[in-house]
Length: 94
Image 1 (tube, rainbow, N blue to C red):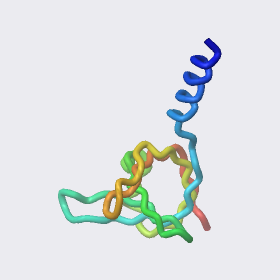
Image 2 (cartoon, helix red, strand yellow):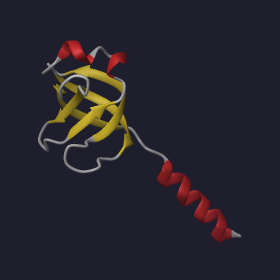
Image 3 (cartoon, rainbow, N blue to C red):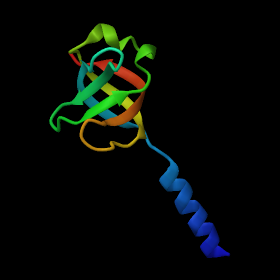
Image 4 (tube, rainbow, N blue to C red):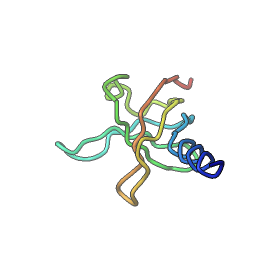
């Protein structure tokens, strides 16, 4: 019985995604109709595709350096397929 409880707790903990802080620039990548808003992380150069850019009007602040609190909703699937994030909050770095 205790083993079953432990397995359930571990599976719940691994399924939760925690918010993380990303500092980077807003970029627009791709050609119409496959255009997407990307956050290019400073230092590592990792790209994150934004799932909800319309919530923060990211199209109008291209190349701005931002500090973003976001949840990863889909892991990267290799080159050309970046991780997908959902932005929770944004701060502009000045």
